[in-house]
Image 1 (cartoon, one colour):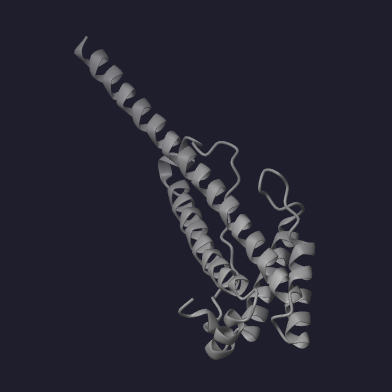
Image 2 (tube, helix red, strand yellow):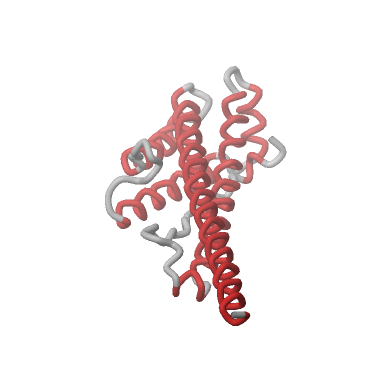
Amino acid sequence: MIWWILIAALLVVLLLYLSSTAGRLDRMHHRVELSRANLIAALQRRRDLADHVATIGILDPASSMVVADAVARADDLSRVSPEGQAMGSSGEMVKAWLAESDLSQALGAVFADRTDVAEMVELPGGEVVVRLGDACRRVEIGRRFYNDAVLATRGMRGWRSVRWFRLAGTATMPETVEMVDSVPAGFAGY
């Protein structure tokens, strides 16, 4: 009789452990989805502000063309569904991240000098340049948060108990975002 009670108690403890682990894993997947949505929103805000800066006449014509072209390529490749997932195959997602990297590099080239950026900020409409600098920082932070959430989730999905009892269900394995997201040097101090 005591053995049955002991076995039942162990089963209850095991079920509680598995239930709490599955709940934690679900919360981690939700965190990945929220981080991805925030990253996509930050990228969209940066594209919108970069496009605005390129069209309001603060930049010289060559720089405006470079930024506008990079924004157009990123916009074309960053079509997003309402759920926040990039449409198409993973190859298309990689192309979208590469286009965002190209935009980061274009912004880095155009806004490389702090004195030039300071002069742009003093012009009428210069507050948009400051907001663009903030948007670049938010992209960098957003990607960091997203990748941290993905790595934590992937780490937990590697646990033996999660694999053996298939606690991840049918959720796809999240992937990190690898892209250039450094803030242009000219935005330092803004």
